[in-house]
Length: 226
Image (cartoon, rainbow, N blue to C red; front, side, top):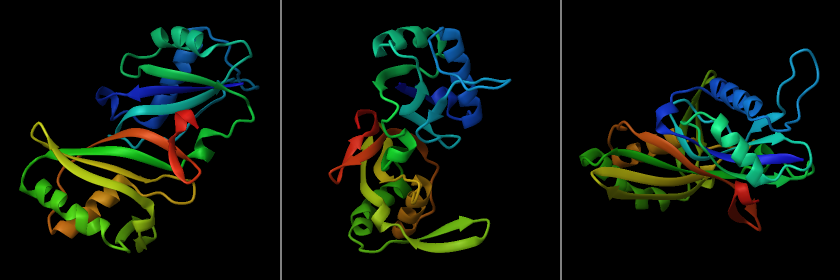
């Protein structure tokens, strides 16, 4: 059996890297006393995997990991034992028990929703006004940078949603982009391309991943519910 666990990566720890996050969860699982399944060998560790590591500097509202558990552990009891063992900056918010045959989280990923916040100044407003024109394009050529150089690619098939509004003095961009093993559209690249469409320099944004999605019948489904 496996337990799928939803947790929040708060703003307080958004600069903590994925390896440190893994260690924190491993320690919490050990402290919880739960009947977790461990690997064999001289240095056994919990059979733990994350749906998708967050980049450093990005917080997460509903992040997911899965861990092997022995039979007879109910989700409510699991949460009750794990919650006090987790750091306050990584609160757990839900759990779901699945069979070992259930598809792995990483293999089921389809897309992710984010918010990007910036000061609501003239630059951000110009980007917001450019959203309809960008979405109207049948092809959106962006430049991806890698160790091998710069490569142009069409990101339109990987862009599923993009909206902009103002909230309490901030420009808030809500977006959902592809996140699979074969193709991924990073929010930074989309925002850079939107800034180019608006003819402005990309401002400083605060990114937060809101939810991870799978797909069922051609429609997005929260990965926690898939």
